[in-house]
Image (cartoon, rainbow, N blue to C red; front, side):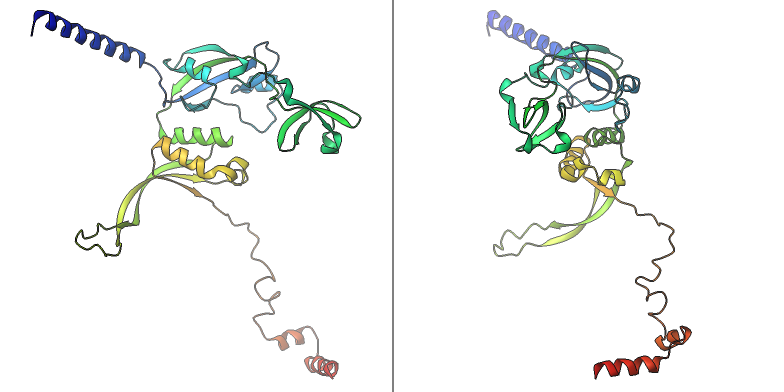
Amino acid sequence: MTEEQEAELEEQADDADAEGDESAEEAEGLQHGDFVEIDYTAYTADGDQLVDTTDPEVAEEEGVDDQGQEFKPRTIVLGEGHIFEGVEDALTGSEPGDSGSVTIPAEEAFGEHDPDDVQTVSAEKIDEDDRYPGANVQIDGQQGYISTIIGGRARVDFNHPLAGEDVEYEYEILEEVDDREQQAAGLFEMYLGMEPELWIQTDEVEEEVPVEPDEDDEDAEPEFETETVEKETVYLEATPQMTMNQQWMMGKQQIGQDIIDKIGVDRVIVQETIDGMGMGGMGGMMGGMGGMGGGDIEEALEDADVDADEIVEELEGAEE
């Protein structure tokens, strides 16, 4: 090898080291896949309208604190689209304790306002209770809101109510979330709007596993054997509020799979508990009509001062 070739190899090695150092520097701070807890408040860029907040004081000031939502810090996974991409970009590479603001342009927020998505429809297509400006309506499967209504015609805007608005986020990174139960609870809260009671534990479970067939026996029937395996499980208490949650009813399989993938567990088990109501049984139902079903009918009739023979005679006379 000539001196010139050696010098070229050394230069390539130096370049590779420099790229490695640069990559290491770029990878510092929070990265995609990290769970983070953040506080934020977002207004339209002109400051007129609240878009979203985790701050209970802001929610109270804006009069939205009575909508059944709990306002508190939110756990998200960076890179999963849980918040606008522009906000994720600002959070990536940052550290817990960092804060800042970022403006999301309309096209990256709720889209530009499209005049073609404003249509005139017959008021007959709208429920009478919803025939007023600002009402949210559904027309032919499309969600929109009434901008004006005159006589028998209504102008319905099918754009998002915040279409065309730039959005400004102010945020603070509170912490990186490493606890897996807290991670799972944060994901459930993000999907369902409520934080359920849950825990993670490892169970020993018996399951049927296939046995490797004999290579020489091509006609061998598939065989299985029972093995005891360990399964890491997220256990979840299902409350009445959760079981009636529309997001849960329609997407429990997808939500459960996302928890499994992101938390790294084997399964999710949802438990439902039915407590006693303290009503002392069902009275006459299922137990013999108030105590008569399991005893002597004639004795019961005597207690009621009724002559059983007379009843039998009357029945026989009716049959004749």
